[in-house]
Image 1 (cartoon, rainbow, N blue to C red):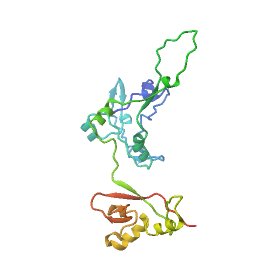
Image 2: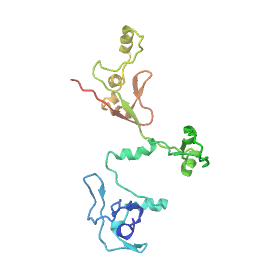
Image 3: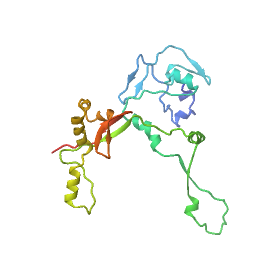
Length: 243
């Protein structure tokens, strides 16, 4: 798990990107303890022990050690980098590859033969192909029917509203009387929570956001019921504020 050699010792290293400095900022500075910089990234402890190893004829020390986990290296026998994640935007890194869609490529297929004196007829449909690239590892993963991604535990979006300001959905042709009379008999998720607190004593010590951990909302009957199995997290995505 040694980075390099790069810099002046190897200007052609991939991490140089044609510049004079390593894009990964190696070698790192020696530090007596691990700290977190102003951008939220960890700066790991690196002791100046004087111990060096030779790689491609260049001596590398602790400043070139890549953060690693000994257990993972021995378990998978692979090159595995490990970093400490302590920022909220780490969620973007975890899920962006799942949401970005499969790898694709735009290609053009021609026979390379055309008369010099004849104008070329451009067929945009034949010239443009939107192709999906499926790597061998992804193909095997899908053939074996492994899960592409998982999310645990489940997250329930909790609706909330001010008094008599709940959202109402109705058809354009519905009469006002029918709309009002129908909605008066239907509780929202938030109003059903109040009714559940009156009905179930074990839920009175739970906040609205904590309620899904012990109860399940039945959207058909518009009421909360005690949870029989599993677990869930409640999230308030929007809280209206009165004037």
